[in-house]
Amino acid sequence: MIPGAMLTQFGRESQPDAVTGFTAEQIRTAFDAVHVQAMKELAAYPDADLDLPPLKPHPLFGTRIAGLRYAPLHEMIHCGQLALIRRMLGQKPIW
Image (cartoon, rainbow, N blue to C red; front, side, top):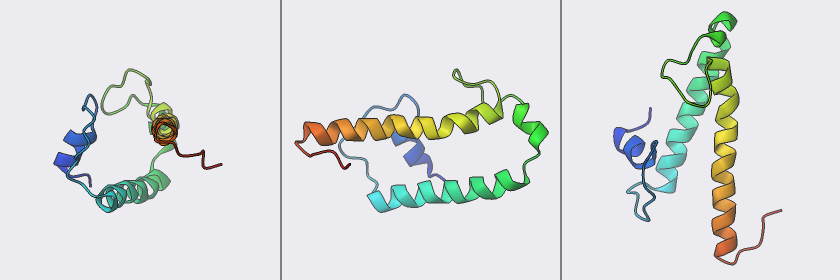
């Protein structure tokens, strides 16, 4: 669902770059596709499997349910980064 080049550009340990090669629309399309697929799969996911280790080890959580709980917190980190950039550019807070 996420193009390999996009994973390279925005993945773990990637370095910020002013030129991404992706439009905001492309990024949002990938984000929305992942969300839709996750909601479909989660509805049919066995509850017992949520206590299993993640498919790919992660230093911040040891179970799949903990990974799901962490996902929105991760997004909030990026929201904070964007808010800081907005303020540095002289823009007022949105709320």
